[in-house]
Image (cartoon, rainbow, N blue to C red; front, side):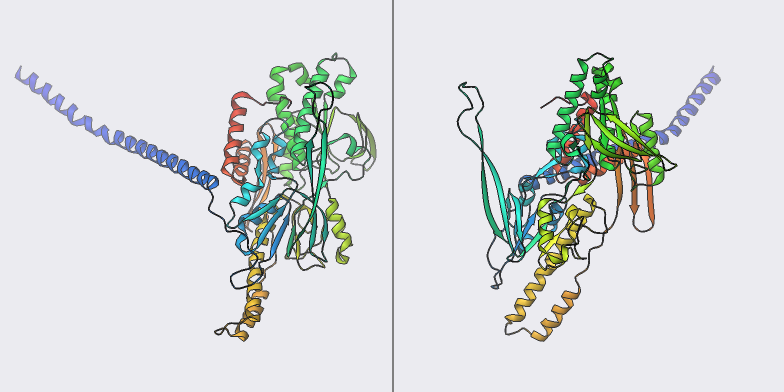
Length: 547
C-alpha cells in the first residue's frame, strides 16, 4: 500500500513537473498578442491625433498678414495676379510665400475641382461636394492675405499690364405671372472692372474640343465641369425611365438604352467603367430587364485605349471590357453626329474602311482640349505667339515668349509635356519657388540702387549676377499614370525614380488607386467625405436620383 501511494505521488510529481514546460509557448503568444494590441492602439491614437490636428489647422488657420503697398525698406510690393482655380493654382498658392507679393486670384469658378474623381460623380459613386474645395478655403490658409475675385477675365493688355474682368450677377425682380406661387423673372446684371498687375500667371485651363466634327457641340455631353456631371446623371435616369415605358421590341427602346462614350483616354475609360458598374451592381437589382438591355460603347479613333500605358495594361483593359460587356470600338473615327446616331468610319487592319452608324440615347464626349477665348486673344496680341496653334508658348521658366512678366501653366500652354493635372501641379510648385527668387532679385536690385553705409555695391552686384544665373529651368518628373477600368479593377503604370517602372492591374491596383487619390486630396474634409461616400456605396449602393 505504501508503495502504491509512493507511485501515485511520483506520477503526480512528474505530471506537475512536466506541466510548466508548455507555458513558454503560451507566454510567447500572449506577448505577441499584447504587442499587436499595443501597436494597434498606438497607431489608432496616433492616426486620430494626426487627423484631429489637421482638422484643427484647417478650421483655425493662423492669422494672416495684410496686404501693403510697400515693404519696410521702401521697395514697392508687386502685385501677382493668378487667373484660374485649377491644378496649377493650388500648388502655387500652397508653396508660395504670399507675404512677398500682393496676391490676387481671379476665377469664375470659386472652387477647386478634383478632376480625377469627376467620372465617379455621374453614377453616384462619389458626390460632387466631396471633390470640390472652395478657393477661399485655400487662400485663407496662406501665410499672408490673398484676395479672391469671382469673375471672368475677358481681356489681357500686356502693354499696360492691365486686365479686364467681368462678373455676371443674377438678380430677381417681380413675378412672372399673376399666380403668387409662380417663379420670379430672372434678370442679369453685368459688372465690368479693370485690374493692374506686375506679374500675371495664366492658368485658365482648356475647354473641350469638338475637332470641328458636325453635331458634337449640339448633341453630346462633355465631362469637364461639375455641371457636366450633373447633366450626365440626369440624362442617364431620363433615358432609363423613358425606355422603361416602351415595349421590349420597340427599336426606340434599344436606341435609348445605348450609351456612347467617345474618347479612349483615362477620362473616357473611367466613365465607361463607372457606367458599367452602375448597371451591374445597382440597376440590375431594381430594374433587371432594363439592365440587361443597357449597353455602353466606347469609341476611340486610335488603335488602342490608354495609349500612355504599358501594352500589357492596354490588353488587360480590353479583356476587362470584354468580360464586363463594354463594347469597345477602336480605330473608329467619328465623322458626324445627329440627335440619334453617331456616324463613324472604322479602319480595318488591311487599310480599308467601313462606315458605321451607332445609335445612342446619351452621348458623352471625353476627348480633346481646345483653347479658351482669352488665350486665343492673348496669342494674337504677342508677335512671338502668333504661330501658337495648340496653346501659349512658354520658355523653361514658364514665361511667355515675347513677354517678361506673364507666366502660364497647365492645359492653356503648349509644351513638350502632356496636358495633365500632374504636369500642372509640378509647374505650380516650380513657379512658387521661381517667384521667391524673383523677389530676392528685386530686393537685391533695390539695395544696389539705395545702398546703406555698410553695403559694398560691387559685392552686391556680383551676388546679383550669381542669383540671376541660378534661376533653374522647369524639369518635369513623371510619376506614372492611373486609371480605373471598372469592376473594382484599375491599372497603374508607375515610375520609381530613374531606375524602375512598375506596371500592374487588378483589384489590388484598384485599392492603390483609391489610396493614391485619397492622399492627393487637398483637405482632410475632402478625404473624409470621399471615404464616407465609398463606405455608403458598400452599404447601400449608389444614389442616382435626379436632382
